[in-house]
Length: 254
Image 1 (tube, rainbow, N blue to C red):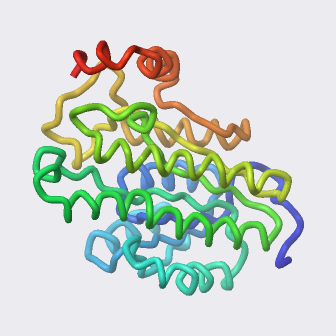
Image 2: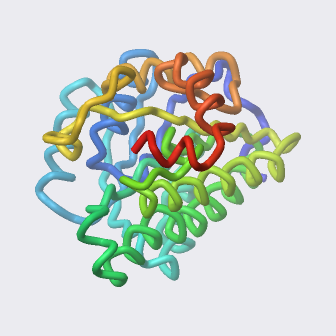
Image 3: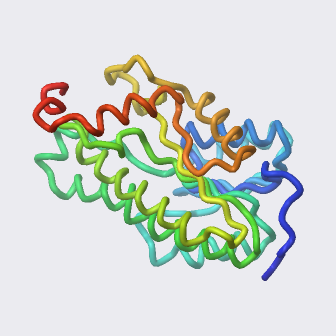
């Protein structure tokens, strides 16, 4: 093991973000920097957006490094993430990459639909397994996985995206069970509709949330060592009811 001594608090000093331009991830990074995080790796496809995101976090006083990472290239994940962990202990990995897709278009274009599944699920399986193994090797750390309330039950309007998140959610839960007792904490975060640039123009739900609210929930979940976090918390009973509705009734809800 690199470091069998767990950090003195559940909040991280070092953070690896997989999906370095995600608005939710960046809001979470800003919040953790304001608490105690000092080193941040932003992993994503090289772009001006990634560099701008890094610059914004540096302005908050953090040591920020960018890492070339492609969710659709699982063969590279072991090498890319291994290099990050070789630089020093990583207290938390935030798995935040994913794409919404366009349901109406993707139904007519199976190649596009598969890209949603490969990004949201297959890429996450690869990255999650590598990150979990690295965290276990160092003896401590948290893996926070951004799932979605859509994972609870696929709707007619987003079943391609919802099914990919359902696979991710089940995988993350299983990985958490596999790593239980190793010093690694796996937390699944299930936000409802998040108001971001990607969701602009989409129909808003009464329980829609913001990147900042998700970030606050992540912090609270880390402090409590929660295994599952709903954002907002009121989504949990609502989705519990929807999950058990007869299919004919659920179908009419749209």
